[in-house]
Amino acid sequence: MHETDIIERFSKAPVFSLSDLSQIIRNRDYAKKVIARMVERKKVKRIRKNLYTFHDDPFLVSTFLMKPSYISSVSALSYHHMITQMPKEVFCFTSKLPKKCFFMERISFYHTKFFFGFEMQNYRGFDIPIATPEKALIDSIGKVPLSVVDEAFEDANIERMVLYLKKIKKSNTVKRIGYLLEKNGHEAFPALKKYINDKYIPLDPMIKRKGGKNRKWKIIL
Image (cartoon, rainbow, N blue to C red; front, side):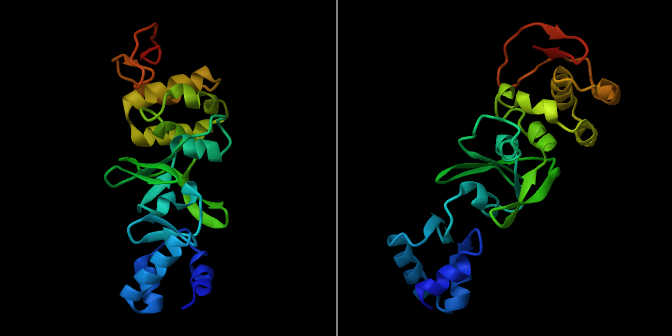
C-alpha cells in the first residue's frame, strides 16, 4: 500500500491505530516501518504510542482517545458560543478513571458519576459527543473558576437545567447552579428548594473566601 492510499483511507477518520493499519497491510512490522517513516516525514501526526491522526485539531481527536467520553465545561461552552474566553485545553468527561494527555495542547479527562447530558454534534464533518450548555455548566463546578462561565447562565435553558439537577440530586450542585441561574434572571427556586439543605457552602469551590451569605440558596458569596 502506497502512502497516498494510506492518507486517502485514514484521513477520513479522526484517529487511527497501528492495528488499523496492520489490518490493511497485513504485516504489523512492515506497517510499523511505514507509519514511522510517514511520521518522520511529517505526513502524519503521532498522538501517542501506536495512535495517529492526519488532523491538527485536539478538540476533534479528544473523545477518540478515551471511550466513553464527551467534551464539556468551557470547551463545550466555547463550541456553543456561550463564553468569550477561549479555553487553553480540551475538557472531557468520562465514566472511567481521570487522565491527562497532550496533543498540540492538553486534553484532560475528568471522571464523572453523571455520564449524561451530551449530544452528537457535527464538527468538521465528524460526529463527536459534546455536552449541552446546561450540562457543561454543571460540569464546570470545581474545574474552572465559576466567573469564567457566569456569562453563559443568562442563555441557559432553565427547563433542561432543572431536569439535570433533579437527576443529579446533589445539594451543593443545586445551590451553586440555582444561585447563578437566579443571578442571571432565571427563577429556579420553587423547582429546586427541596434539594437545598441548611449547610452553607462557598459559591465557588475553587475560591474558598468568606463573604456575605445568601440565605435563600445557603451560599457564601
